[in-house]
Image (cartoon, rainbow, N blue to C red; front, side):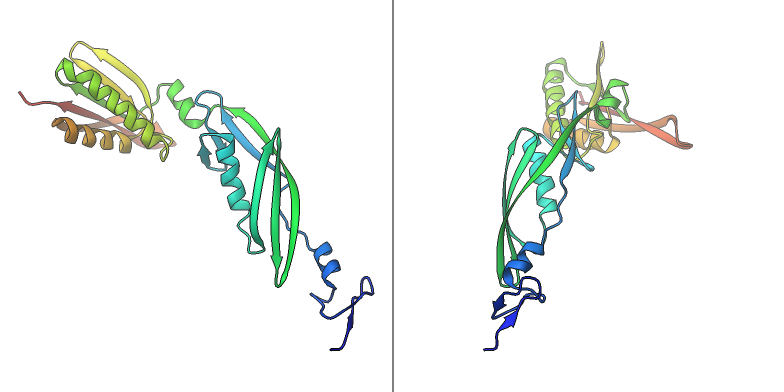
Length: 223
């Protein structure tokens, strides 16, 4: 087999890779990944936010960010560990029939914020009121069920929150951030506790020039 010469180092080799010997090719090949990532932590609920997504912990957020960053065809495998404000990443890269181990350090910054959901809770925002008009012995059970369900929905909907629970002589009013979530809660309570539901809407004001309607969902039990 006729030998070839690397134009960069002059080494005689059997095969060139993109016109270079294996050593020179791997030295010039560098994977483009960010040197720093930015995360935000809500000082009220403690959730970690990145882009438009959220996670429960810094580790969970870093894992999701890195999974997205490292979705590149040249990366065969990747592992990482977090130490202080640094992410130590070990990569196994593959270019055609060549493999190259590489270690990188990615810095991450964590900024304290108040997330949109917590900000809205703080100002008492709501899109729906659920009025519980059921026997007193069921009220606490239903309120606890709603609180648990809202936590479950919050993973998928930032507007899934209870901004206020108002106890009245005739029952309890629960102020919900999302109409969609409020209707799901009502449906769940209807199924589990055999209640009746009545929904009414009224104009709640204007947002960006558009009319905003708020729902009132009456949950009751027939005599």
